[in-house]
Amino acid sequence: MAHLNIEIKAKSNNQAKIKKILKSKNADFKGVDHQLDTYFKINFGRLKLREGKIENYLIYYQRKNKKGPKQSDVVLFKPDPKSSLKEILTKALGVLTVVDKKREIYFIDNVKFHIDEVKNLGTFIEIEAIDTDGTMGKDQLLEQCRSFLDLFEISQKDLISVSYSDLLLKKH
Image 1: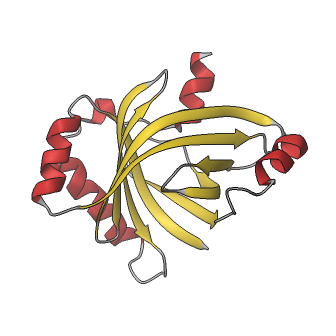
Image 2: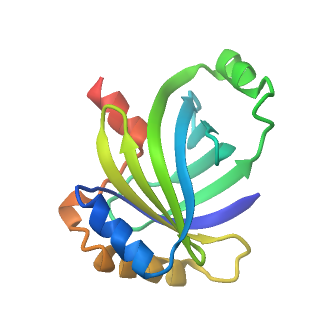
């Protein structure tokens, strides 16, 4: 399943305020997920296997490293969590790094919010405006992201251009 995301990631020390705003907007709370994202060594884009109680996907994506709202072209595959997929990918490609996080997941219509606590990195907010069927388009998704950036009062200095995997690799 391929779709278009416009997304932002930002360092966040005001998780309680963001949760309060989401609640006031009647966001659909999906729950708290402990997720392990295993990133594999590939030549182009990023490939990760997400293992959680709520979300389990093999995710391939391409995204430029830039601050602020950015396009991410995503392909998702939902494997059986009991399959040998992780073992196959680990042996065939090798592991680049593993991101261990606690993630609160919310939705308002097509916009997904992640309130993350990432082991060895800290606390973050992610906003993903998602077009699963090509009916919304990039401009509308960008506008959705920007409006939530403003609503949450996320400053430009807190925006992050790279993935959690890049931050972890840089740290080590």
